[in-house]
Length: 114
Image (cartoon, rainbow, N blue to C red; front, side, top):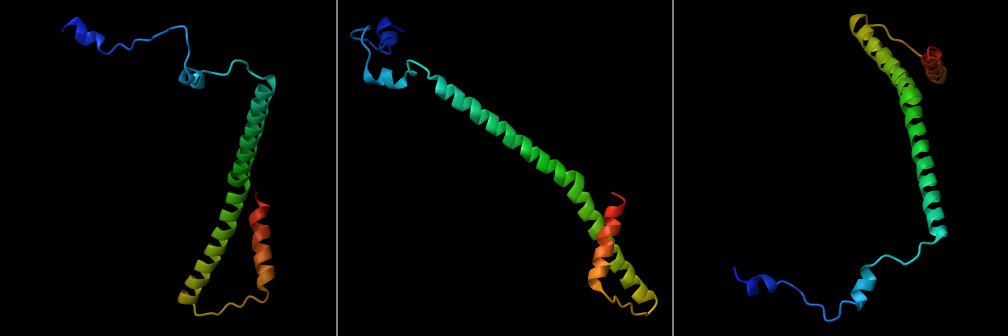
């Protein structure tokens, strides 16, 4: 490999002290405003509070709503299954006189042991 081959990749600068427009575009700003730093801090505080509120909502769902709804619908399914089994085993008809009272009693019963 000769010297001429290795120097063909070197870019010669005509005047090293001068700067071109491309260098100015790629460079960072000369000074930093304190207001921009404050805005970044406020955004990070708001973002942190947003993440905390999402975590609280997630805890509410996993600790309260999911077990309550699971218990309520589980009992509803069990009552339905038991009624189907009893109708198959013993042909007796069950009449619920007040469906809203029946549903409310199921909701109260599900919440009683939480």
